Image (tube, rainbow, N blue to C red):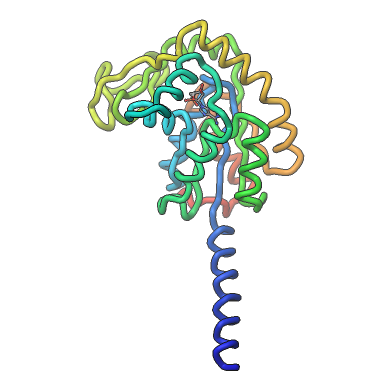
Length: 245
Ligand code: AMP
């Protein structure tokens, strides 16, 4: 009898413990067209809010540098500007969010990109009040200009722009000193294709999130103003959501 009691006490505490751990994970989801500035804004927020910045594009680009069939397949999707199949990206993301640095939450940049991905994320993280969706807006004309000047660090993937967000030393990453390069999918043809895919997928994703989740729109005409504006809106939605001290 005593052993049975101990067993049930253990079960109840395990469930409560697991639940409170999950409940503490606060998640930001950045939506927006390619080149709208999701990467820059989410990585600035990552520093401010002490949460890891998870770019699914970066995870995939890192994977393409490895040996094997998967890398070859991924390279084809990425260089054509096409979406990687949902099951591959979901597995990649779920493996990443299991890491210890995600225990208090994380910032998603580039995920979800389909309604299926949004629904799967919802199954894994059902606490809607622990999610804030940040929708980054920018006109297609400005997006094209921005993507043409975009550079990334070939080593750590940190993003720059030759005019709007240049490195301190020309062509060198501020963080690791490695060379800055243009992304292979930042060609005019591939950009057009990525924008078309984005347009086709965006409406159902927006409907899904706007109906049920905390939602913020930010217009990214100027990075600094947009970032300040975004922080104010996050505070207004939930002042306790993240510690930004
Ligand atoms: P990004 O760095 O976010 O612009 O993503 C670069 C490329 O990675 C995209 O054009 C897709 O090929 C792929 N990718 C990134 N995130 C996803 C995702 N959530 N679903 C499918 N493909 C993705």
